[in-house]
Picture (spheres, rainbow, N blue to C red):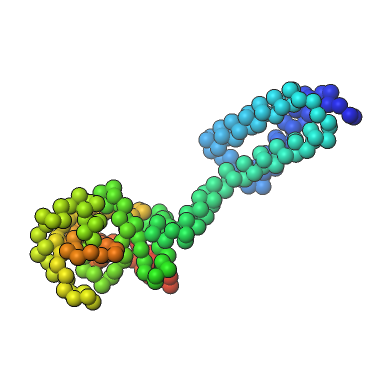
Length: 232
C-alpha cells in the first residue's frame, strides 16, 4: 500500500491502541485512576491527543510506514504521561530531595520535619522566612539567642543605629554588644514560631546565628551524620 487512503481507519487503530494501553497501565498500577480528578485529567489528555492526531491524519497524506511510526510514538507519549501522573508524588519527593542536596539551605521538608544537609564548610546553613523576609542563618547550638547581623537586622526593618545595645556576649573573638529585639513570625518548612526573642549584633557578621532561643521552641532536633533534622 503506497498511499495513505483511509485516515479514519488509522485513527480508529490509534484510538483502540490508546485505550488498550490505558487499560493495561491501569491494571499494572491499580488505584492510579481511583479519583474523579485523575479520570478527568486522563480524559482531557486523551481528547487532546485525539484532536491533534485526527487533524494531522486528515490534513496530510503520508506513507503507511510513517503513519504506523507516528501512531507508535503517540502511544509511547501517552504512556509516559500516564506513568508520570501515576508517580507524581514520588517524582515530587525525588525533586525535593535533589534540590535539598544541591541547595542545602532550602532543606527537605516533610509533613512533620525538615532535614538539612551539611554545607561544604562543615556547618548547617538554613534559610528562614522572618516576617516574610528570607534570612540565611548558621545553626549554632552554642548561641543562647538568635543573633542577627546588622545587615539582616536592617532587612527586617530595625533601625540598627537607634537600637539599645544593652546585651553582651562572650565569643571566641572577644566580648560583643547586641540589642535585644523580638521577631514576629519565623517560618521554616512545617515549622512556624511567633514572638521569638533575638538580638541584633553591634559588629558585622558573615552570617546571622540561629541559636537556642529558636531551637528550644521545637519539639526536638537531632544531628545524624551530615544531616540536621528539625521537628515542630
